[in-house]
Image 1 (tube, helix red, strand yellow):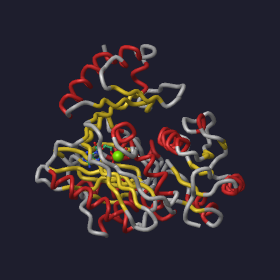
Image 2 (cartoon, rainbow, N blue to C red; image 1 turned 120 degrees about the vertical axis):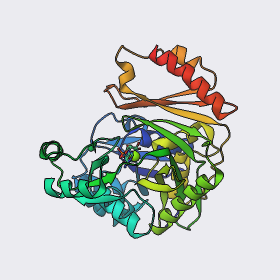
Image 3 (tube, helix red, strand yellow; image 1 turned 60 degrees about the horizontal axis):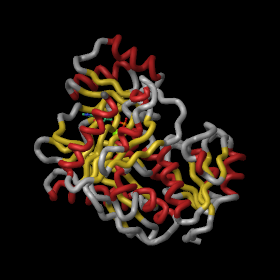
Length: 380
Ligand SMILES: Nc1ncnc2c1ncn2[C@@H]1O[C@H](COP(=O)(O)OP(=O)(O)O)[C@@H](O)[C@H]1O
Ligand SMILES: [Mg+2]
């Protein structure tokens, strides 16, 4: 049975904001959602029909979860594959185990991409202070060391500006206790962009309008759409995203992050087989959002129209903004065209994604201008 129709129950692994927005999309279309998430009162769990708070290692709980849902999808990469194996022979898992296994580990992801011939930043796999020193000597500085497992929002990354002494390397390995890492050459890029592609089991695919991303402290800060880039660059990004999705026989969403170099070359930075922070603009600014598209793809329905309805900027709201108490929401909401999204997280830690806003305006320039106004409200 390939199709899951409205009224059915969907299982969601992971209870973060991506799951919350997926759940909103699913409930809008009359589906029920069961969220499986270790930590109670999760952003998605808060608004799901059922929230199951068990660890991903509890295979009995996972099997019970599978029994009550018709399809399982995920919003989080770091789910142990043993959990997926326990689910896969009981219930449809979309996207499948393979794409998650490859993309949840930076080494496997990079090796997959370079073997398949996609352009990536020069890299070396390292697993000791000695191999790190050798790799730094080969690639040159600056470069960046990233853990193979469990990295996100720049966590588990260390930039190396000078040939490191043993102490810097030892610090890294000691701090993360990570046996394997990927050392990448530092790319001085013109821009960062991402392409989010949805694909169905029939092989139909659709790419969202491409945005240009800015990061602060390695964490996404803004996405601007349409990207002020030559159309051949965005077309090429879309084509690469479609090709990667096809090579995984993906059913669901895949986000592909790129660096655009000064020679106009696109390098693939990262993959994620789920909705992506850089696609949040679509929730307000496209005919079908990335969450609505994920829903359609995993339920075996026709994909929706991903057309952009309005130029838009998206900005993340990190926990740092709460340092002096709650931000001035009424003043923020007075900014024309602004839509506020908060994820229901009670603890605003620095660097934690608490919410985002989008500003829809008649042009990308105008959206940026209004964003500066919104920033003044938030930062004083
Ligand atoms: N090789 C690199 N050269 C230049 N900037 C980089 C490089 N790797 C990462 N960065 C910067 O750090 C950000 C986060 O790194 P990324 O590899 O995407 O990890 P994460 O999983 O934390 O998103 C990137 O979006 C980019 O701004
Ligand atoms: Mg990234």
